[in-house]
Image (cartoon, rainbow, N blue to C red; front, side, top):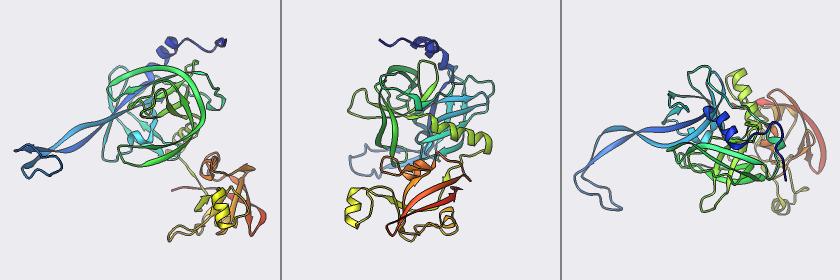
Length: 342
């Protein structure tokens, strides 16, 4: 039997502590309103439908949580993906604020919002590198975009999960890696809300639910969001490290098909009219060439489960990294200074 540490509290105590800092996000859009003179026939445009102006309509909802008393809020990027939509943040006390999107990171599916308010309650950010299977967690969010501050509890069911998710707002599908799996109920509208441990700290951002499956939800680990948040506070934007290459990740099939010397790593290849190595970029300055295979970055192996793009996120813009590559079946080590992705 596991006993709670002195820092851990009961679920009602944790909920009472963090609930004031959880927010709902409503998504609205101006849509054309039609007047129908005859009932529309399924599958046919109604020639008697006449546009009668535009009306603001609520098209969805999400969740978020306050991380700075001056009004900084974390949520998912896919919650605020529509540039033509209007987003309103609703606090626990029902006050409403129009919000500004300060920055987004498509790699982490993260968005940082700002509302004009002061002395707001916040939730402390935890450490997602120290999670354990079976650990109790609490999910809070705006379930179905209608039920504010819905609370569910469960355990961490899995770590480092990978799924392909879709966003109904922009229709895009993204591959999400290293997710936290939980059986705490996560429903549409919970996206962007906090996944909290029994110390009352955020260890993940709720992001996805598997339809037609019970008790299977996913959250993004909080640690990558910490760096993005610090970037916004220090520079007013998220600084994404940039090497200036185009590549494909190697697997066993590619190794056999193209007679490659390894079954892992990033093979530098051109894509369409775009060169494999961006002229004038950090990679070219470091001496990388088309056909090179990047095996390691600072001794960290590149693979399908640990892609180059994610490894680079661990470093700062301007930081020097060491690359272990294969060129013409010879091992070479190069050093590169990371640039900033524009």
